[in-house]
Image 1 (cartoon, rainbow, N blue to C red):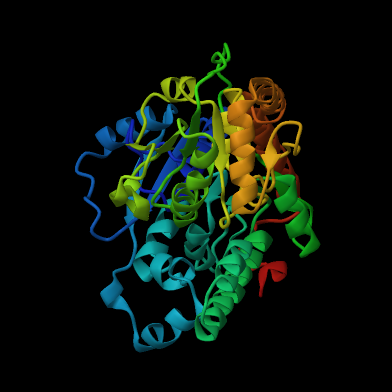
Image 2 (cartoon, rainbow, N blue to C red):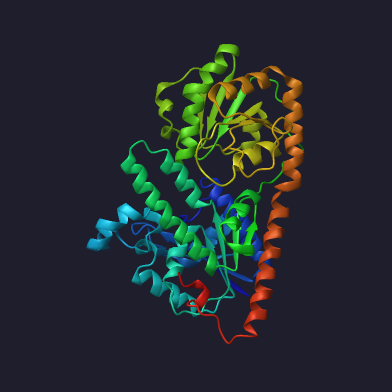
Length: 430
């Protein structure tokens, strides 16, 4: 059995690409490998991305990165200079750049995919919405069953971003982008036999919008460390995230510049760690704020969490579920988060986490946990128990594999009734 994976992530590098998108895709790749004997992956990359000279060596490198035997190749996107006049005028007003079919669905990209489909794959797995723009252009082709990981519900994220715009013009243009993104999501939902989301919250949201029972919850997953690190009695607060991602850098800046001074008034010896790649994306990084350490990319998470008392996640934007909170729970750490930060997760306020949305409330919750060992330990232990039961990586991987097997069985059953499956089926036409 052969499976083709399409992703807009650049090829992974061992020890560098550890952010949530790669870790989530890795769980799906492991699940696919349990179902299929051959796994191939196509990376959609920038046109100037270095070409692969030795395809066998490249596949070995990617197999090492994903820890699964895999055949890998690159597919460059169209160049910016290839735009026509209508792309220049209308696309910036209506589409977010990731969803313009121009970038992923050009003639070269479509022909390359059509050529690959001659290999007769048993399934196509599409990672995130941008890659679907290439699949949309395969009109008239007979496709194998398509599984799609939407990951974040992009239109909801775009709505939050639009409502945060200050000018009416920016807000109006951003809301037009929301329409384009939602239409792309609907097309993807109609084409997919399985549409995976991060949480039951996202699943319920999409089902209310008419996406049907093909929507399946596949939570972000983590390895639960054993044994649990000992309780840290020091006064160290941690924020961990991929800082080039704007919602993360905005949350880190909010924590450093607004919340942290409030904490220091009550706990002058407290220390704040901002960990994650590219800390220069946080404006306060250049100001050397008091009692704040920017670590950059951390290679040893066990060591980092051993010196952490609690984790603070003051997110006010973004979508999906926070891998950083699931991971902190697995390490038995007390957590403080906003409602958006904990959205889609099953941690209960006051039992496994403290949820506060205003700056003063977040600061007071941090101070409380810095001064109360019993509460800190109790929340951390309860959160770890919840993480082990709901977010353990082997459990999520096997659940995904089970869904994929069921999808393939349904496809084989349907194929016995129909001679072929055409992309231009009636229920897909928008």
